[in-house]
Image (cartoon, rainbow, N blue to C red):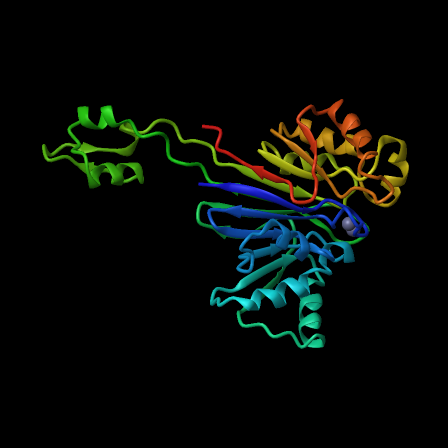
Length: 308
Ligand SMILES: [Zn+2]
Ligand SMILES: [Zn+2]
């Protein structure tokens, strides 16, 4: 089952000619989940040439302009395709007012149901087939939340030799066992799944954290992430300024990744003060703490494979 993260933008505060605003689209087996959508998010979606108009759910970190002003256009353009399934939007208080006001003031033509849910973190806000999305509190100049999408454990590996040995014939009984059901063999013997399956295998975890002060609690929430996308807005030199504006340095993002034992850290939400070549400093400082750090770039794609 494929799990991919598409970085639609990596900038903070304002879009730049070469850097869109922070937004990530996660695709899991054809289902689409959008995390934030500032001005210009559509441009990246278009340039990626993805079939994106049937987004299943949008998760908003907070209602600052650089994270939400692209949403009305995305909602409108999503009406260009036929769909019956609703689009869910989750976010902190005011997200419902923002979406409703945009819909009414802009006279948006929408041909599918939109369900907006304001959340109070921490909570599990969305449950899908084999995974769930959890929201947790961050600390910014207004209510802000981080998200993790975590898959449930998968059944262990099926051992065909073992099944044959126990007298289970090849066919539907194998499939039942693989799906966790016991079977009775033609010889009248009951065989349970744990007799033919290895230990349960861990699912994957994606985390999205932006616009926050450094908080040690974030590492607990994003523990074991296969991919952690995290704000690293400033270099160490501006640590005080970052704290004052309730943002993080790349070193603090790396500290979270290290403490959470994440597999990979993708820095995002760069301050517009840095040119692309100056971003190297953010990377160097982060890698001193957590080696598997990368600078995200607009339209960068991360494949998130199973570990076993
Ligand atoms: Zn921001
Ligand atoms: Zn903000």
